[in-house]
Image (spheres, rainbow, N blue to C red):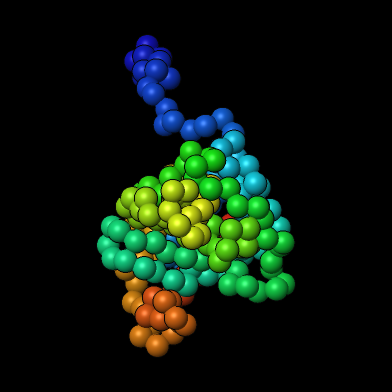
Length: 193
């Protein structure tokens, strides 16, 4: 009787809000596991691109190599770092004004140069970074970056990567001093139920 009541109570508890079309992906790293919900319904082009890298095992053995910020505010960047053996063609840019997604805590977004140049590198945001969203009213490149997923488990792992020691000499241009002294390897990236 008590068991039946407990099962009923558990069944009535609210579940976390996960969109029906979200696809969960586990990034197993040398720093721990990060699980993300990929928003295939809101950012179909960018989500399909990321999932193509996951399904093709093209992210296995890549690294989180960059950390900008400190503690609870900043971002970590990872991916193929232009390795031609891993890269798929660049994708069309999906700005946040189109998807409705924003650079809030735990957001995953595609790294890029010009709009339409994103391939395999992505970053995870800690804190809110509205400056990375699209701002069509601004001059110049105002398209921002393309958010396509959010961390649902392992934000503590992301924070550990962000606060890891940086090399004073590695990196070029604005990236100098932002490169991790010891990159964090992405051992595998796999879809999970």
